[in-house]
Amino acid sequence: MQTGYLQVDRLTMRYGDLLLFDDITFGIAQKQKTGLIARNGAGKTTLMNIIAGKESADEGCVTFRNDLRIGYLEQSPCYPDELTVLEACFASTNPVVRLTAEYEAAVASADIRRLEELTARMDAEKAWDYERKAKQILSQLKINCFDAKMGTLSGGQVKRVALAHVLVTEPELILLDEPTNHLDLEMIEWLEAYLNQSGAGLLMVTHDRYFLDRICNEIIEIDSHSLYRYKGNYSYYLEKRDERLSADRAETERAGNLLRRELEWMRRQPQARGTKAKYRIDAFHELEEKARCRQETGDMQLHMESAYIGSKIFEATDVCKRFGETRILDKFNYTFARYEKLGIVGNNGTGKSTFVKMLTGEISPDSGRFDVGETVRFGYYSQDGLAFDDSMKVIDAVQRVAEYVTLGNGKTLSASQFLSHFLFTPDRQHHFIHTLSGGEKRRLYLCTTLMRSPNFLVLDEPTNDLDIITLNVLEEYLRSFKGCLIVVSHDRYFMDKVVDHILIFHGDGNVQDFPGNYTQYREWKESAAREKKKENAQAAKETQPLRPEKKERKKLSYRERRELESLETEIATLEAEKTQMETTLSSGNLSVDELSRQSNRIAAIIETIERKTDRWLELSEYE
Image 1 (tube, one colour):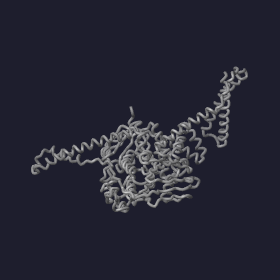
Image 2: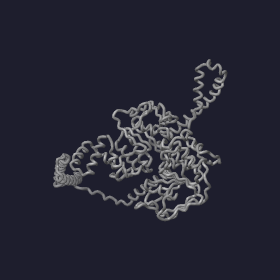
Image 3: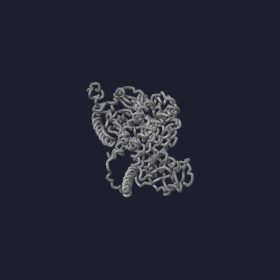
Image 4: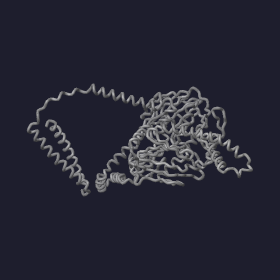
């Protein structure tokens, strides 16, 4: 039977007149891995903050099992600038983790007396694993300078340190808000495997649908302020959600038919309304509410008009670029075709964003050139986002770009109508930008990018902070987009749906062109690795010299038998001396000189034990 870790009961949260969720209830048990899905602005991050104790709900309560260890990765974590990476990683109430942090601080300050004391405590608490694990996880997340100050790191690096901190503390319940943001594909696949092997309970918010599908065994969705639960992964959720929406639509249609009959009855003989049966009047109002209810399925209409684009798009000729010792491109050549949809993948730091900035003219190559066609009109959605004026209203920010927008069918929309297609209600359009969630700001940025009618879209990490509903519609738009497209993304699902081939940035100027999507590339790469392994094994087998037949050997001589007996006694004596010296070294009573001498002696003893043990094994073979 699974142990209950978390229980959320009848939670309600409002911000002023905005209702986020109403009377929602759910729980998380041991080994249960739950994904939380909702559109931007529906309260996903607010719910995570309430569960983590960083915000308070208007109504309801959150209950944990006693003494439960909890780890929370915030969407935008922050640490004091003066902390080092390791200090931030060990910032925990877990006593063993705190002990490890103290040990690292003593090493950094070369405090011998403190080191002696902490070494003994580390031995007693078996805390060495935490130090090793922290450095191993940080290295997996491409954080290799453990002494770097947090104030010198980028936002993405801070997020990765925060993720390492959560994993190192070995929580029993893990709360993750957008854990795959700022991770490259290699890191995402590592984290996927790590969480699958973990026995912890998990509640996470993520837009990465492959990640959801491969890790979660339950999906919860906040829709129209209510919570819906689906006992399965993301694929199962899609199937059951469609069934739920179909049933809701059928119920709404039935309510509409009943409403028409009830409306006729209510209007009949209005002077006698006071005599009508109260239950009929109450039933009418209930039907009226039900009939007016419409599921907001995020039906964004993105069939935008794009400018004409000629046959010449761009040509890259012998492009070279490096930053210091880091080589980005080395004599890169490429001719981009009309209506091509290209994906760019690779580890962080290999130059993907630099490449698109060179293409759009923000950065100049060291040598070579990009020759862009005269008809090309770029629409560039930057990873860094757009710096909106937070004191402006949403509608004002859009009207700055254009008062009217022309769709692909020739229809013209006002800025307000256009925003409605991006799920900004008339009321939300008049909110100040500083009140928007991170995802809503990204949606607004996407809106302002597309409304300029570009014919060549360059999207650098477009999936970060966008909800799955917005991503679904964006994917459909990009698939039918009558123009050119370059997408830089770590979202495997998104790439598979919208691109027809990919460039893989391997680093050091090595760029590979692959004629397929990301999943096809991974399958090809794994198949090639298997073939290479098979070839290497075969080559090793063919070149391996034949083992000479083992000659029959006589039994041990009298002298060798005496040596074997002597070795057994000597090894036991050395092992006893080693144990005694370990106790002395951990006592904290040695001077610095004595500590150094004893350390050298124990190293010599260990080497002697190993040498004598090898000889003992050799002689024992013939005993």
